[in-house]
Length: 322
Image (cartoon, rainbow, N blue to C red):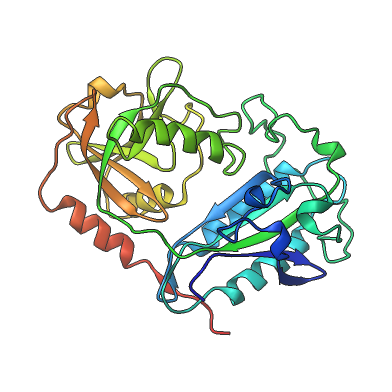
């Protein structure tokens, strides 16, 4: 398998999405004239020659987000549905080559799901709010304006995609604005953040850095942002809403276990001049900022990036045998 494929969870099985509902890249409906489903939740990770890092953490984040995003929704997947879907996804992942699969929960009409029962026939009305009652959307409707209680259907999908090239360096640019409406859930804001990233790329950057209303560094468009203050690893303050990044969580946990101070602080871009700044993501792992367009001048401590990239790589584990 060398091209992207979209598989729909239907009747307890992963089935290829009909060609008429796939776009030219095999993963969407946009190029066919059919309506592209609304993305409610997404999660992705790198599979490199059958090895993956923190897969269980990706699973827990996805399952929790699905539960929270579908609270009060008719036809919502139960935890058992999500468990069965995830098991089928892991079994379907290629064991050779480099892949960047994405699991999705989408809300759409019959054009996107084939009109089928996407829950495997199980009772889909139960399940608790995984957020413990907290509002994880920043006050905004995470479905981009759609009323989730009137969604005609919800579907779990797998997008099997070859992994894009990875790199160890990144040029940053401050985002022109913060487009997020669901800062704690991966999925609803991906397209809007992609547009912010594209705008940053037009200025010569690789990634956009989203700031808070007070100008503090919060997150990257498609990554997490960290920096080093001496020998201490620094993350944005916990009161700044951002995605619970799996790679940055893994990095921070590893650092703490190794006795490295992990700080959470407010920092504006101009306050990071002379600091080593990293981005973290499932695809690239750790990348070091070699520049910041119209921003601070990041630094580098020789050998630190290579050391921590090797430590993260050592955490990759083989996928279960099938």
